[in-house]
Amino acid sequence: MMIIDILKEACQQVHDKTKGLAGTTIGSMQMGRGAGGDMSRRIDLIAEKTVIDVIRERGIEATIIGEECGRIEGKEGYIIIDAIDGTTNAICGIPFFCCSIAYATDFYLSAVAEAAIIDLPRGDLYYASKNKGAFLNDRRIFVKREPTSDTTIGINVSGVKPAVVERLAPIIAEATHIRQFGANALEMCFVARGFLDAYIDLRGKIRPTDVAAGYLIAKEAGAKIYSDDGSSLESNLDVKTRFSYAAVANDKIREQLASMFG
Image 1 (cartoon, rainbow, N blue to C red):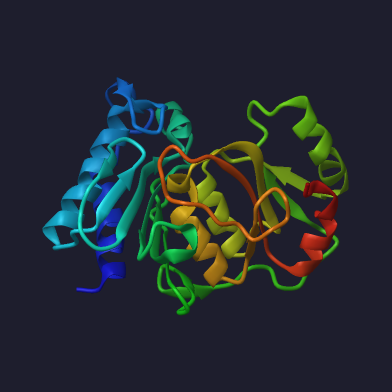
Image 2: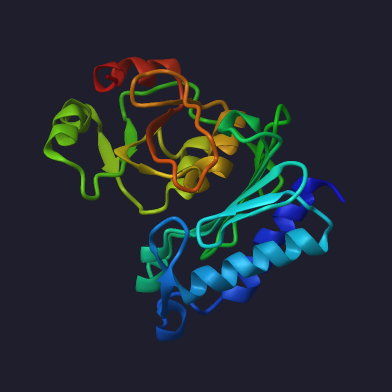
């Protein structure tokens, strides 16, 4: 069984085992803090255990890096898990959250070789293998290759400092539409399928677990991903690492965002 098929299976099992938990008292129950520092909810732990069980049952002995579990040592390669990305949405019953799983051959974002993300409320499955393209439910997807005057940009502005707001102000003023949905991995998939022209998060709070799968899916769909200084995004995969980034659909959008980069 190929690794990508195992990641897809794990996503589907999380979809099945967490169905009906979002927005409930049981699903929202606080279970202590995870390795990433955020409060773990029952739905997070059920989802992550489901992923780990599938990974191990299918014989993948890679080191596991998870938002809740931290690091579980293994042999060759790395599995990077955000079993519920968009937990706040999930516990509020807002239907925008996902399960995000990636496999990397080395301890860096650029080494992510397989990725799968499932939109848990809708059941849509996004996936990609390095140099083989990005897919949504078995249909090849691409970024918005030809820019238009009608731009839609996703920006995460939760808790940003005034200086960051100043950096973003020209972009907010020029964009036709600004959106914030609350789950980075899924928003990167929206760039990948052409819904968003760009997605920006300059808070310095994003973890590799948040974006490892979305990183590959967006790139395989044609997106370019930058750090906040304008260089190509690279990071280790440690659960304690934090960074900012922007995923853009085409060079024209990159030029429009040039003033944002430090």
